[in-house]
Length: 105
Image (tube, rainbow, N blue to C red; front, side, top):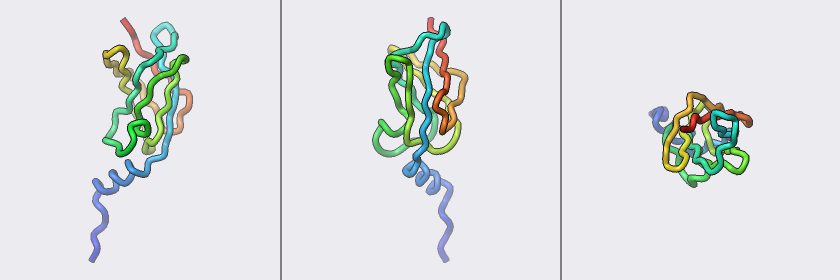
């Protein structure tokens, strides 16, 4: 008799086959774009190329794009000049206009 796959095996398979995307903008509390920020997904470990595992750097307009995500909602970590911020926002797979506001000192 063959056993069904374990939940760990299914989760690992999902991470390898994930094809979801999400994108948006990082702005400060005054609405100005935050350029050069690292925006990371806070979720389980992804496999493969770091460029395809929910890590992005904002461009001149503060835009970022995550690719290679499983379906779901993700809370971003934003790193600016070595300081990490955890905005109180969730970004859902398939979103293309997420607004991530970081309160800078």
